[in-house]
Amino acid sequence: MSQTALLEVKNLKKYFEIRGGLLNRVTGYVKAVDDVSFSVRKGETLGIVGESGCGKSTTGRLILKLLEATEGQIYYNNTEITGLSGERMRKLRRDIQMVFQDPYASLNPRMTVGDLISEPLLVHHLIHAREKEQKVAEILELVGLNASHASRYPHEFSGGQRQRICIARALSLKPELIVADEPVSALDVSVQSQVLNLMQDLQKALHLTYIFISHDLSVVRHLSDRVGVMYLGRMVELGKTDDLFKNPRHPYTQALLSAVPSANPQRKRERIILQGDVPSPANPPKGCVFAPRCPKVMDVCRTERPGMLPLGHEHQAACHLYP
Image 1: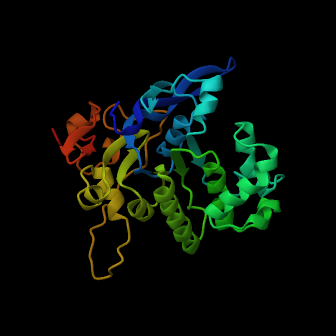
Image 2: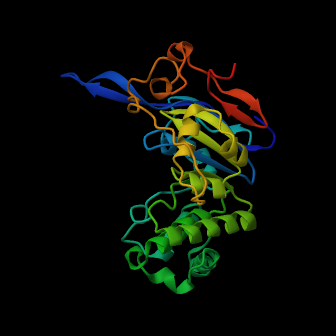
């Protein structure tokens, strides 16, 4: 593992069983995440993008061990955490937290905001019950809410306020790494910018590291230092944000970026229209997963799976166009 990397993922796989028949036997596997590798440095934001069903949210859940990996290794602070369980995993959860996509579903409607934020602190024995009120007030103030909000229930807040509560709950244990899974996709555009600015301010103030999962390319470009592009369970391109957006190398990334509307109406952009449908993750293509839809497909693409190739300046792509 690199000395500067906070997190490193190596050859990560997650296969879900498909069962059927009278005996409910395993008849196949859905390859949700299929051999994904990347690293995240301390203090940076790694954006992970891709269309729905590409495996980006599953990757985030695997990192937090909300799902168990089928194969592969996850290293955190030079320690392999893939097989951790029990008390060792419980301690690790202080350092890695998650902000979920839906602020309505991720908050218990029967608990007050104060109880939601203080529960992790009490579970990990980080505060006494008498310190709860003061600590909750400090955390709420950190995310732009008032101490008086602690006595209210989630249904009394707007979507943007609920997501601030989710962020506050994630911050309560003072984590180093936060996995943010589509944290603003359920919010209005005006509220999205407020939450994104809050996340950036918190990152600077608390020295946080983010994995930011999204399908919104403009949001990822605004927030991320590096971007990984996923397609059908695999990472197909990875690079610094400016480099990847200005010079995309993988045909899928090129098609993805061609669909982004331009703020300048005078600027003409050639739209790349992909033909066909996304293959089933239960029966992915033998070679490159993008081959059935790729406008630049070659014979080798249909038979051999390309690995991630270095293209310079921390830019990598899994494509046979670059020998």
